[in-house]
Amino acid sequence: MIELANVSKRFGDAAVLSSVTGRIEEGEIFAIMGPSGVGKSTLLRLLGLLDTPTGGEIRINGIDIHAKGEQNLRTRRMMGMVFQKPAVFNSTVSENIAVGLWFRGVGKAAIREKVEDALEMVGLAGYGERRARTLSGGEMQRVALARAMVIEPEILLMDEPTANLDPVSVEKIEELARHINRDLGTTIVLSTHDMYQGQRLAHRIGVLMNGGFAQVGTPREVFTVPASRDVARFIGIENIIAGTVVAGGNGTSAIDVGGTRVRARTSFAEGEEVCLCIRSEDMRIVPAIGGEAVLDGNSLPGTVASIVPRGPFSRVTVDCGFTLSSVLSWKVVDDLEIREGSRVVVSFAAESVHVVRATHLHAPGRV
Image (cartoon, rainbow, N blue to C red; front, side, top):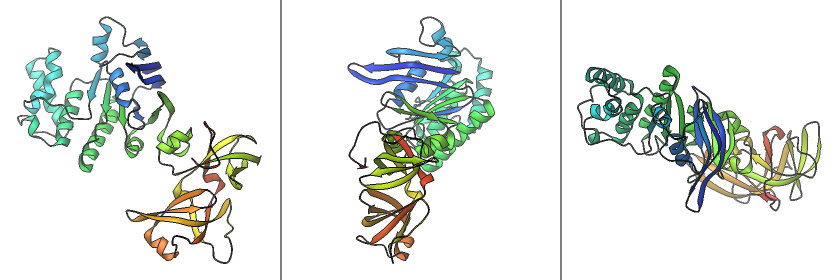
């Protein structure tokens, strides 16, 4: 439904977007994710015709939406948009929701009916005569969502719609987004910095980095098989280690990390520089009592370098010649009698090591 072809955007000398290419399918929820400042909001503004690209094309149903002429108005009427900060006018809730219908010349009776339906949809039935600016942040965002949806758009753009809301309001907005997509068939393009929200809502995710999409895939693909070191770091993989493939065979390779060999499932050839991505929850730490533990996969002896509280858990960092970190509950740390300076063995399966190409050369070890 939406095609992005080498879309770029500059503000003066600053290039925010340089090569955004991808497709958004009709009827899906597509989440644009990435670190702060990478251009997520800029891309949504380009999609919503609130700004124009410096280069490239954005096509909807095969038509360049930034071409001159009446096409701009027709395209704009296909879309509704909800911003990060709820934008409401100093008038009643009903008048806020009806704005788009007034501009379209809809009759008063039809407006009244559509506004009441929209209020019902967002859970604000009976709020029509209240002043919009007296509502809570979550309620104002629902008013903004009702205003976007009352015009029955084919595409809904949502720019960080829950960034400033409490957890109850976040849950309500997400529930509404799922309903709008599932029951009305609306295509939703959502920008968010909340990784868990992307996993909860999106059919597919585009990770925006360095001016373009570093990876596009299902939530499972992005969060379990990141395409690069930068994506792995963004999605929260703590253990990202540089090494060199030194031996391989039968799908399992040995990777040298500063003199220590780590076994991993990978198709990279000998001599290639790679990065190992290991999730902290896939590692096991046991005391090195009576010698090193021997388990399938990898068993690396080391010394506990630090134990840092993290809510009900502790982040345990171990020096194995390179640094590995795992998250354990306080109870496990106490039961194992692990302390800073303790000798331990860190174990993890070869299958739990995700290997990506090293885009930049580093000294062996943590990157």
